[in-house]
View 1 (cartoon, rainbow, N blue to C red):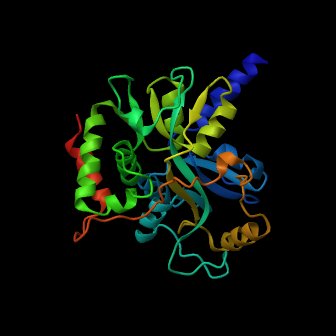
View 2: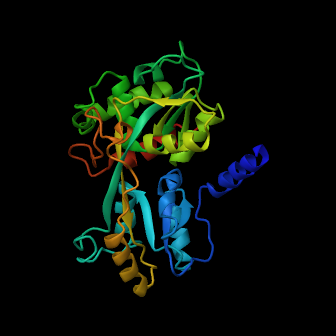
Length: 312
């Protein structure tokens, strides 16, 4: 029995590689590109969808679609990535009859995840805050952070004493952005960046960080697959992470109707709203597009430049 479970976990770890896993799509099932870390929540739909895990990076999507293999019918991706992919022409505007969407967007929201402070209870025997996250002197060790401008800078401001209700307002001003980067600079040598939810999970699981920001939904699913892990996360001061569904431009026309009918008759509702762990907390920070006042430069562009300048 032990060897069987070990083999199963090994095969799962192979499946969770940060890329599209190319293969033949079964015609009778829709192919769903699932963000790495969420696939366990969708397993009850495996009789209707053929799951293909991917890392959520737009470069990965561009490369996969350029091969024109038509293996993806439907994509699960971060709202921000969906907007970028839509502007690049990688996704099709949804038809009016597809969940009553309009032609000005390429996605519709399925659920809202949260990025929270997570830790291993066998390493930390108290509930740390974002302020503790920055306290390298008292709690030495690496820290995991999502390589995302809004997430990282919001967390930096929370650690600097800004309330969750005021974070977005502060980040909308040049002085607020400067304050966030100044705080982030203090932690820079200790940061291990992650891009997919599952990467954050494994940072804790492999003892590569003492604490990390992490996807609440993904880390819950990870613990189900790794029952010996002892992860906990803060329910306060989280950052919202909207996850949406989109259709790639390479989809075959006759399969669009199949997707439309499938979503109408069997909508994707993988997360129970009755579970307290899945509810939206009142201290969460909404996901919003922010640009410095009187500037055409986006927060993402500033963040990318900061990452480039601070590379070691």
